[in-house]
Length: 167
Image 1 (cartoon, one colour):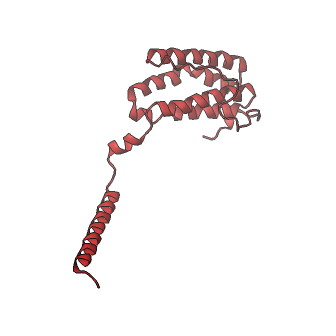
Image 2: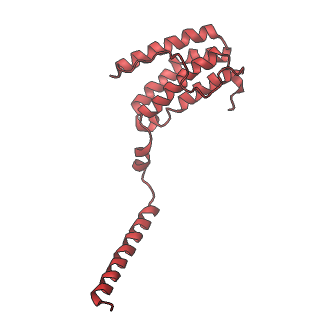
Image 3: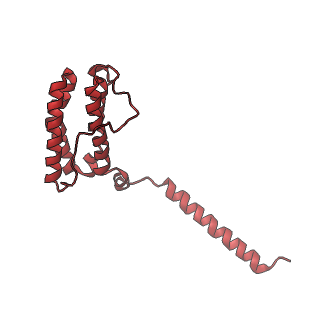
């Protein structure tokens, strides 16, 4: 036999469940605020990790004559830092200056396919990175030239031209 209190309980439970669904649906339709979007963007450490991997890959691409891959890695190394322009603008300004000035000789050597100039510029960048890390309080992060590339699933020996990178 159906108990009246059981019926009321089921109805109450259904009403609470329905109200909960309505609240979730209303919340899902709410437009995110700018602070919500900025809050999920990577700050500086995550993009910097990608920068480090791409930087290491540039060396192996240039060394093996895959100049397009070196140019591609350099281009997207810079692009990886874009979120920091919003999340860490002061640090991004340092990055922008680094890429536009300190890293420029690496890009120039890649475009010229000049391995000797590349080696010199690449080594200078390693030193500058370490000095910058030290100056910003991250002296425990020491960049070294790796013995193998960060991404081992790429053929670094494909012969290519720096201009082969799509715009």
